[in-house]
Length: 454
Figure (cartoon, rainbow, N blue to C red):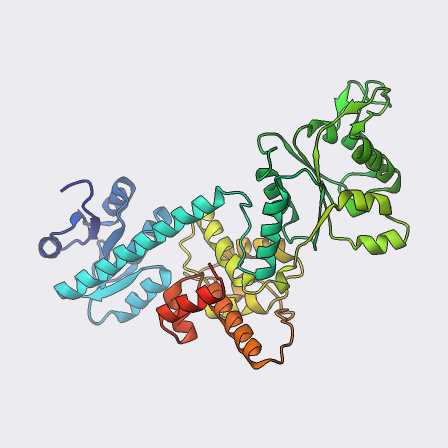
């Protein structure tokens, strides 16, 4: 057999059946194991894409306990492997149980050659498609704005704005609720800018006590205050030639606002206890969840500093306003955490998807990330269900669209919303989304082209 011949692992203790199946599958390289330990050894060594697994293995050839235990351990070792279980005609219950544990399909003894070949061919095709999908996802993660998953038109406009603004040196103010992805976009600005090879330095203005924040930002000279045993540069100076990200800028104390304003105007700093001015060349990106206009009216934020920081202002919509993004993000997080935790999970149960789409996610993407991570750990079955999510109750779906009176606009808006939701719910599986919408795949492709849904 050549290196390119597809490998199948046959886990079967009946020697006669081993020979019969191997002879029937002459287009594959058939590896044979007669028990659980040798099967696991074969999986570790050869990583076969498809495994044919007889549930009746020694020392329990008349039951299914050994076969089901083997199934579970193979999926723990190699979650992407497609396992086709072999059962007797009267053993449908164990076959269904195996599917629930993550098996790809099942067939009965005595086997029919043509049906078995069709099942195997389909298993190889699904494995190949999933592998391509993982490679594409890996390529996407290597691009700028990594970590951002969206199909919402407003969020896509935000991405285009970030791409346009990134090559310049203008100050950017990111406005959005906590957990909407402000730091992800700030890093995207840095990675798309000419400063990408320099430092990206982030500081949370709300997380550091006021009496320490000034020295964190501007640094200090030796002896500037009690405990200042050596000269220390601040975050602004440390970010020289790179990007400085000031998170939660709305919580910056008023005395420091004046000092930051002077830096933005003059592009020089003075360390605490120092006398000399130090020039700093840095691109400033700020972010806040606060309403700065109201804080300016209340005298809590300087208007002149606001205009210095917001040469470009970008509003990031909350997750509840992003059409279809809840399901899309949930699938992305599930794939990431299932892989990192070594859990062979196969998507969400319908009740889980319904709850994900109904919940308003007040904590936005950060809340969803934590919820899906918990669900991956807590899930007992092959799919995440509503109970695994641990959400006490849905708080409204928030998918509100402007009211249209023109019938054509109403129809197009409804069609677009249905297509986006179907794609998100099916994790962009075109065949499943077309079936959910009740249309053919070519029709769905036409709709996606019309609505500019890549």
